[in-house]
Amino acid sequence: MVSAALRDGHDTPIERAVELMLFLTSRKAGALSGRFVDVDDDLGVLLQQAAVIERDDPYTLQLRASLGEQLTATRHVTSHAVPQLG
Image (cartoon, rainbow, N blue to C red; front, side):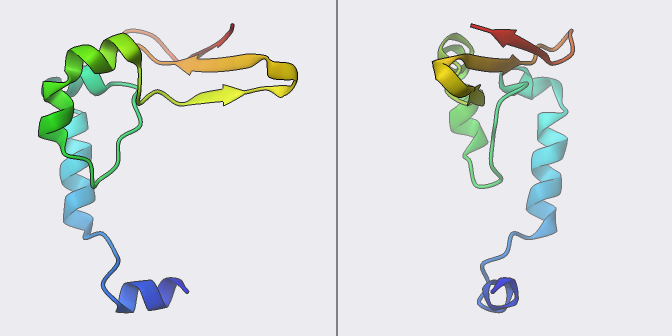
């Protein structure tokens, strides 16, 4: 199945992944720190929406525990990931 996808050209060139990694480690991408982004995302658009992304956290992954209890993992530029109950 994977080999068929590669054969049909559905792979992502390693250069695109490296460019994304380099961009995310740059100071330009501070608003995206701790957010889930994909190599196919338009980074220019994401940066234009930085204020909304920081305010609403649409790209932050959240885990839901049993019994409706929500666990949210947050990551800040100056701290380690800290699970929070809420």
